[in-house]
Image (cartoon, rainbow, N blue to C red; front, side, top):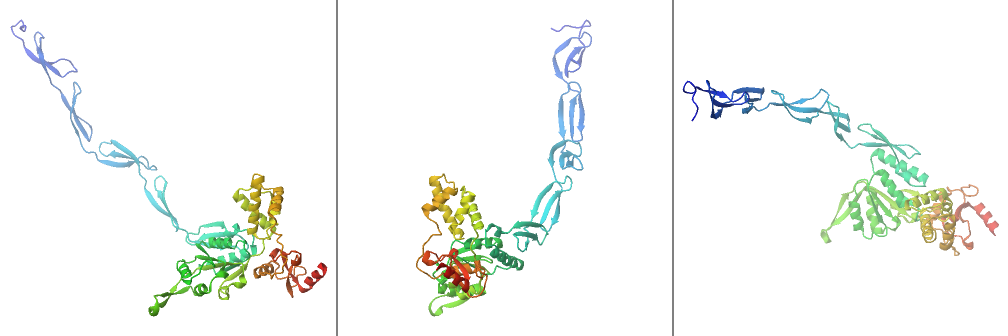
Length: 462
């Protein structure tokens, strides 16, 4: 039983157990006796840490209740006037949620071909839009340097002509550059061309380089393989504006094929027959302007109508230093070690024809692989030539007529003058080594002599 105060009964009153506790008990105000049963009474206080948050906090024990948070009013704010670093901040309470980078892009047109985005705050360059330049080429006479200028924005650049990759034939290349420059200035396809010379002179390679300089596509066919006019018509119909149609051995084209090619080359149109029998009819199709590049070893046999539509170029014999350069380039490309002295020796075995020079190099390289680890020096070159034989020593004891292409070749090489006195009258083709003594009908063994010098030579030989 609870003890009674001296006055007879307790005077119970509520009291907290301690300063930091919210537990309340009954306590006698007279004797201080405590009841064991207690309960909790908080002293709540409303606190607003910021305009977007309110909560009740007990002043005695610190307990938190009734938290109320308003929706923040977020705004993007830059950290500084010259920075694009941005943070998301509540405009009422100032709380920062996240950071990001936000540019203020402005489109600046540098020139008609170039525009770019620039940030007005930090200066960073964003998306760059560049249109394709409209290049206009400026050629310099007797030079492979070409200046290109955009006719919209005026930007200029220089490049080397594609002709610089072709060794030799300097006079022909200068003429071709002139034709290419004129065609580019007028924005027209190149005039039809006829490249003449013996096999191995690089006619097709030169044709490809001309097409590369014109920046057009090429299609190569052989005059011997086209048998039907319809097949050739299909080829012409599939050509696009400016395309190069390279025809090897153009002198071999059949008559029915020429009947399609000549009007197509002259007027850029073609007639085709539709249907069969009495209901068949011809229709004329307009072709895009294209360029024919014919190659031939027998220019005198090219159809006269076709020849009249083409600019003819006769490839001259290559000089020894040019053959040496071609051999060196070929050896480097194939990874062949070739001494300078061996290069000079091989260049003498090809009659001034690059194709023959490359054949000789291939033979000598095979010999070098077998006996010298693939390396070619002068000794290996001489030994290989002794095994395979020299290209210059083909005995021809029966007199044969000099081929037309060789005559044209020699005429250009000797510039239409006597090789002895320079006379331009009464010229004759002379065998340097007479046929009776094993001389050949190759360009290397033929020269132009006037009648007087030729008779004088004959008398000396006799």
